[in-house]
Image (cartoon, rainbow, N blue to C red; front, side, top):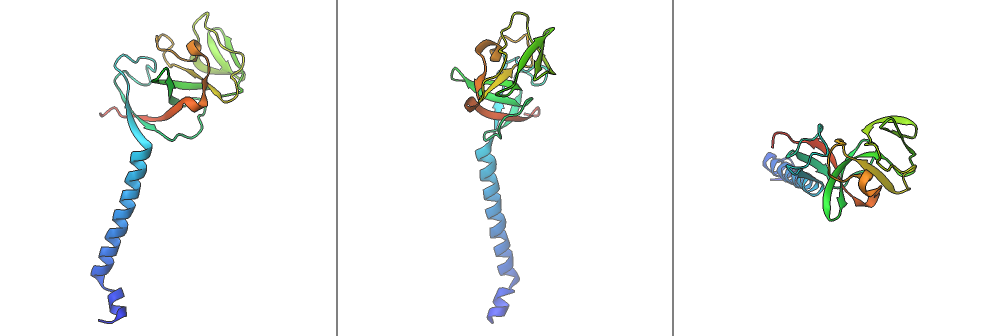
Length: 163
């Protein structure tokens, strides 16, 4: 068999294609396993109702892009993972009118309980995080103030209701 025939041997080409496919599959699996996880919400966690029900499983990105307003993130607070929605970013101006939060003069969907302390401005490098359910007893930025962006652990991508 000549060198030209060896290069064109179909069995050799199939073996090579299988090795390339196996290598690509392994790289893809590594990326998925190292970057994405499921995060189960505690059965008593009502802070994100109605969007995320207690006991739901969430697909989260462990290497999230910088947070944007309306992102749902998981952050560290007193050694535990907490979930909340990004209401405002560092430098944003906050105002409460008739129980509704306004960010930079624009109305948001967040209801603010009467008597809650809201800063005039979010400090640079920090985020103002709020629960979707204003009646929840779980803490958010109304309780502990803005959260440093470095405490963001993951960003929620979607709800896995079938688990």
